[in-house]
Image (cartoon, rainbow, N blue to C red; front, side, top):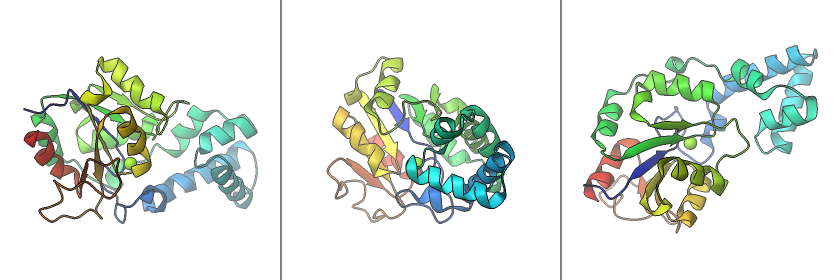
Amino acid sequence: MNKYTLIIFDMDGTLYQFKGSGNNNALFKTAFYEEVTQNAVQFLASQLSCSVESAQKIREDIFVKYNGDISVGLEKEFGLNRMLYFEQTWDIDALCYFKEDTILREMLLGFSCKKAVLTNAPRVWADNALNTLGITNQFERIYSGEGEIRKPQKEAYLLVCEAFGVKPNEVMMVEDELQYLKPAKALGMTTVFVSLTNNVSNKCFDDSSNESYVDYAIASIYDLEKIVRRE
Ligand SMILES: [Mg+2]
């Protein structure tokens, strides 16, 4: 029996790993994100009728000015439609990067509590990724990041709790980015940090990481079974 009513999962870097990822913000360094960037440059060159070089410069400036929220910046500065931006830059074939994961599906099936995804990625990519992994129907609700309310805003976490009618202290949050676990812990959730850099020795399931807002540190999503089953 586990004591959690709901487990909230991040998606990128948590439910699957890109090659070379595992550290904080590693998504931005992957071949996948390079593909997103290339698509964004093409999108900007086309929408703004400018050269590829100019589009690259615009994208980089917006990335810095808006702290990675490119779609928000493009809407504010150029009036570009955010949904169109997501459709044309994030509709990427997930099979190029990872495959169906039957082991993960079996593990999720074994958890009797409710499950949700809370990702800052756009819906088009969340659907591609979860469908490719073969786990879409394991989640009662999937929250993506197009809207103004998103991690690390507390409202993003509370929205999920309210939708399920649960209190934060009944919730486990599973994430690969520490910055997104901090508000979860502050709200009273049990936090699980997934990172390849975490210790994989026999201590890893008992010791919290050095960060005081991490309750459990695991090296792989597959290790979650040992925590949830134990509770
Ligand atoms: Mg992540």
